[in-house]
View: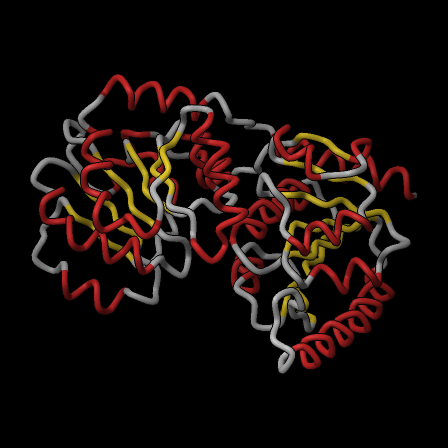
Length: 358
């Protein structure tokens, strides 16, 4: 099979596509990844050893009138570049997982077989547009069905989990940080670029937290320099990193996580049965709030609004960590949502579609 993957923007769409690509790459299929110029996906894709090409792309929804002509021009250029790539690579099937970079490729490749994977419970605007052009749509949860008109296109796959995460267990995770297995561990993170409000709230309570618990704080790169100087004296129970390649170690070691509510929480936390305090990003409120509500309604997480972080974070964290029964119930509820064969399901769908094509 010749597969063209077109995905970019955020980790929520890029990591699932990478996970599926690993399976197909190992089976000897020919892959090409098309991403956006200057996108975060380029480094990740090239580290995975996949060929990568970039096209111009830009969003148009909610863009000012001043920027709109330039963004439309980028999309037009991206469309023409996509046509050229499709002619040269001649894929059997296309895989989209999100990002505006996929729009010009979907338009250029509308006569070819394509599969859309929707990471979040509710699809964003770009994914809603892509759904019109896709022959099949894989969704993370049954809960997503209500957002799509053509039910016959849908398959519930679950959220693909990276193999590098699956190798970690609790004992190995705690050993990685040299943590005491008799103490509870809380993980704070705000995504790959960081969440300033979460970071600021954590720094204010870290000193109190480490009197009773162990803390892993993934700050992102933006706030790293200032936060590092504020927390230098906290000692070995507080460990902060701008970014952690061994993400599985942190997820496995933690008894509780505090984070935004991007798509990855639906799969990665479920895999580890990791109870969560979710703080939806106010500027991506709709999609993150829907993800958070999905987990809260199933007893796997609690919701904390961004504006209440500084006032309520400490009490919310300690209340849960001091209630082993509730924490265990949340862990069981989260683990019940895991779908470990998600990546294999999507890979099988792609192979089936490629078989239909040729």
